[in-house]
Structure formats: C-alpha cells, structure tokens
Image (cartoon, rainbow, N blue to C red; front, side):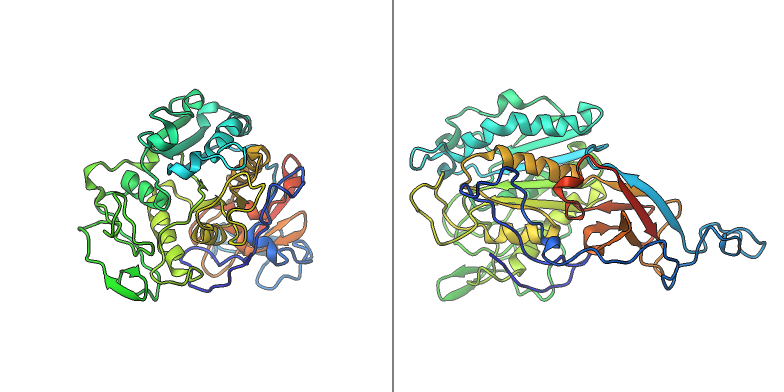
Length: 427
C-alpha cells in the first residue's frame, strides 16, 4: 500500500514514502517493517574523509584551527568534524505511549482467535522487559498506556494491564480513546490553556462532512482543539463535532515523560476521524493531527514518532482466518507514521510478540544521539556518515544552534542493534 502526497514540513524534510505491511501469514521470524525513509536509497558512496567535500575545511590543519590567531578567537568559527561512535542497543531515556482503542470491537473474537486486547496483554511483559533492559536504570523508562477502563464492553470494569503497571515507569492514563479519537484523548490530557495549533497550509475552514454536502462547524471554545470530522461522530455519539477545551484538567506532559523523542503506538481496528472531505487519501487531515501532536510534545524537546498497528487494507474486512476483523483501514494512522518515520503493522497479526519486539527496537533506535562540540550554524548543513557511508538528512534531526544530532529509527537497520557504528559529522 502506498500513499503519495505533498505538503510543507516545519521541522524536517518529508521522508520518502512506503512501508511493508506485516501480516499474520508472512512467516517471517523477525517482523521489521520497511520504514518510510527506506523506500529510497539513503546511503551515498561519499567518503567523509576524502578531503574534497566542498564547503568543509579540515579543522585538524593549523591554518583552519579556530582561535589559533588573534583575528579569530572563536574555536567554533570554522567548519567542524566530529568523530564518534554509536551502539544502538541501549538508551539513556525512553518514552513510549500506547494509544489503545477502547471500543467494543477490540474485545471481540473472530474465528476463534484471541481478541486484539488480549493479544496485546499477552505480549506486553516481554515488551516492557525489552525496554527496561535497554536503560541503565528502570526509572529511565516511561511507558504509558492510554484507554478508558469505563468501557465495560471492552474491559468489563477491570483493567487487564494492572499487573504490568509500576508507578512512574509503567503507568495508565484513563482517557477514552474511542474508535476514532485517540488524538483527542492526548489533547484532553496534555493541552494547556494557551494551546496553539498550527494549521496546514492551505487548509479550509473547519467543516463536518455529511454525504454529498459540507456543513460548517462552529468554533467550539477559546483554545479548544476544533478539528474537522468525517464520520459524523462525537465522543458522546450523534452529529456534534469533536471539540474540547482542556483548561479544566490539563497535565504537564513533561511530568509523565523524559526529555526526548516520544514514541506513540496506536493500536486500533478503525481510523482517526480527521479528514475534511470525502477523500481518505487527502493528507491534510493527517497533517492537522500531526501539528497538534507536535505542539503537545514540544516541551519534551524532540519530535514524536508515530507507529501504527491498524487495519492496512480494504480488501479483506472479513476474510476467513483473520485474527480479527477491522472496521476500516487506518489510513490516517499510516499517514502519520509516514510523516514521522514510524512503523506500520497489521492489527490482525495473530502473534503480537514479534510486533512488540520490533517496536521496542524502534523505540531504542529513536533515542540515539551524538553531541557536538560546537553549535550547528545556518550556513553549514550538517552531513552525517555511518561507517563512511552518508546518511540521508531525512534520517536525523538537528537545527541551527543545536549541539546534538538526534537520529530517527529509519537511520538504522535491525542488524545495527548491538554493533558499534563509527559516526562522522561534518558541520
């Protein structure tokens, strides 16, 4: 499955689109999706040490040493080269949030297969152990699970994840995600009264979609997350647009998670309710939610990475042998994964063990950074090399004035976990 769309990014370049859907019938022992950045060749043949790179001087030569003369006292005035190493099997801090669809269909069994909820519960302990083993101190892990225990059709008034909760390290946030509103659950919990939502450009007036017509949606409240809806649904049912003012009970996201990238993992048999029109392939609904998530996670100082465990095709809603049925394919979820370098898996996969193991690896990869001796300057775009091969800028993040390079999971392959990688940064 492939979605092609174009828009302007505010933080880092659009990564090449494309991913591998992992199904229950794949028969592959190590389920690792093709990340969006891998759809095109990310590695060039340039040698970072060949000395002929335009725009970069050799800081090891006396003539190029900043601060060596009275007219150039700043040691960071000239181009820099950093040689470092990474071994992406550990992390200083890890942030993960599971957004778990709490609608009744998630507890249903199909063709004798366990429900989606039970498959997640069954494999959660090994997922937590993988994350915990990657940090030096268990408190360096922050794993949140968001769903409403009040959904009796799913949980029967109990919380099946209770045995795995451990206070500040593995915790539950009791917010209703619904089939199509996990983004609103995040907004209700973490949006502050001064919430500011950057709209895509261009983006029409907020509308609610009805068959063959558009109806205007009134602005909800000051600072409310007023987003367009497609499926004529609200938290309480009916035709009211999704609107919510968070000023009553906002939470500081930095009180839950460490500074750094936040891995959001959505588990659902439905889609987000975020298109302003009938075309499910239109990216603006996904971009709308992307901007909201980016604003919410800004206090953590790094971009979020969105992983999708969703229905991935419309061709077999009820085919015999599925571990679960799906209500609709997770089109917008998958677009968010494409925008952020996340992974995509099929929610109908019968065994979530390999899926969650792969997601644990992706989370560990998302925390890999190298620190720079000097700040990045606007006039010199950093170039990064792994073992002498250049890494595409779509696989890492930095900005003018920053003294670090943060790598996305797409910068690594599964075989990189545990091996030592020689890193060279020219900046």
